[in-house]
Image 1 (cartoon, chains in turn purple, cyan):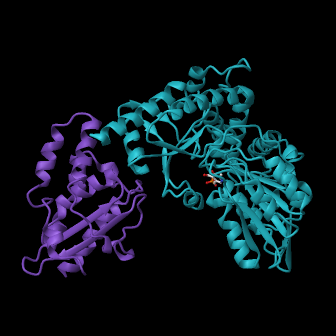
Image 2 (cartoon, helix red, strand yellow; image 1 turned 30 degrees about the vertical axis):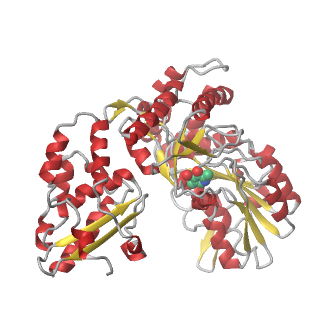
Image 3 (tube, helix red, strand yellow; image 1 turned 180 degrees about the vertical axis):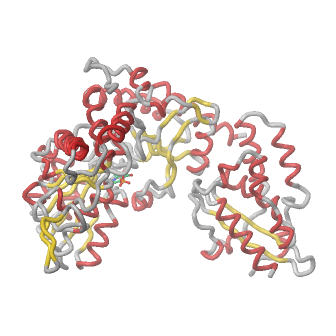
Amino acid sequence: MTTSTDAFTNTQLGTELTIDEIRDGFELLDDWEERYAYIIDLGKKLPPFPDEERREENYVHGCQSQVWLIHHLDPDTSRLYLLIDSDAMIVRGLAAIIMTAFNARTPDELLKVDIESIFQDLDLMRHISPTRGNGLRAMVGRIQNIAQAEAA
Amino acid sequence: MNQAAPRTPQALDIEQVRRDFPALNQSVNGKPLVYLDNAASAQKPQAVLDAMDQYYRESHSNVHRGAHTLGDRATMAFEGARDTVRGFLNANSISEIVWVRGATEGINLIANGFYDRLGPEDEILISHMEHHANIVPWQMLAQKTGATLKVIAVTDEGELDQDSFREQLSERTAVFAITQVSNTLGTINPVTEMVAAAKEAGAFTVVDGAQAVPHMSVDVQALGCDFLVFSSHKVFGPTGIGVVYGREELMHEWPVYQTGGEMIHRVSFEGTSFQNSPYRFEAGTPAIAEAVGLGEAIRYLDGLGRDAIEAAEKTLQQRVNEWTADFPGLHPIGTSSNKVPVLSFTLDGLHPSDVGTLLDQQGVAIRTGHHCTMPLMERFGVPGTARASFAFYNTVEEVDTFFQGLQKIQRLFAE
Ligand SMILES: Cc1ncc(COP(=O)(O)O)c(C=O)c1O
């Protein structure tokens, strides 16, 4: 792993920005245009993804768009940090929500996050349903597997 | 049967036609559904649903077996549908019409017959715009027999490069397998001329008619091909059934594809002899209600009239052309002047999946991705496209809604 710890911790997703704030933000929006503009904006908050990490082992399969995912366990705090990237804007926005839910938690905390109910609350459930070929489900599965492995 | 009333051959009353399709009359995400994913699968008219329902209520039994009245009814409905398909394709005899699950299984059935015919000196000629269903079975055949797979180039407009075709066609060409209409680009290929040239070179000729039959009348005798396949679900019939047309002289001798009940002439433990075509290819209990549904779909189309359907589609295509002629940031892929109404495109700065998701929010259903034509995507240097594919039941207003939806998406991303 060549990516520095700073690259992982240099984000507000899951630290300053919480799922509760996103949930509150969504409540203020009434039509699809505002909702998706907000999702696209969230995507812009994804921290930069290092080019050299775009390798086969970091590629999340099952997506129409390209999705990359790497992680880092901070040995001092035992917190798990994530970096996610995609070439599709909406997938980036949804990845930012996923990161906000999961990032900077200990593996045990992460495994307790009920991502489905978060997506349910945000009325974005269809995006993580197995029928959508956008790979968000695969992304969530990958993250939970990582947490499981690191928790063990 | 609520068969459509006779209509004037000149023009379809689109609003009335739309009432024949229950699925079109619904809202998704709070907006009236605009269904533009017809090339993936088309919606079904009420007449098809009724025919299948009535079949199950009144006539269902197994076919070709029962010594009873329902068995006779089922067999008559099933074989009647076969004859309807025969007429639809202008085939000579029902021996030439084999039921399969769809175009994909059809091509596999045909390719299966070549395993003992081809060797390392032979070539299989396909094109760069084929659906994976018309690539992979031939690739497997080539790998197994040592034959060479040759590929006709596609021009920047999305047409078959006829020089590339002539250069690669030779007496070594054993099989020529080509799509009549491209599912991704909408291009209508000059299949009649190409089939004639391939036959002259001594090749077997296979036409993938999956995307042609929804848009135009297909006459296998005029085409002159040895084989043609299509899927019912793209031609307003049910899923789970499709057709192989094969010339009668070939079909009675063509190697069987699957084996089991019904398709045999006589079974003993010393050996088994097979029936003639089409039954030699239809092992096991077939999709009877689906065959009936397909027959009804064809009758429905005949009721509307192919000329009227083509005229309605031309109107849609013209409207699409008006929009694309001046749409900043939109890049159509496949710009042939000879097309069915299919628009594959990319939008500057946007991933096709973004376009698909945001159109869905507006009630507009399109497909995004590679459309099972990965080599073609590579040819055009794109990871995928967004594709709007139209049917005769779409309206000019829906074309407008679609393009206005794209404009909205562009504004959203410009913010
Ligand atoms: C040109 C073409 N060929 C073959 C197929 C395969 O049809 P099916 O999936 O019904 O077997 C399709 C369907 O997408 C197609 O568009």
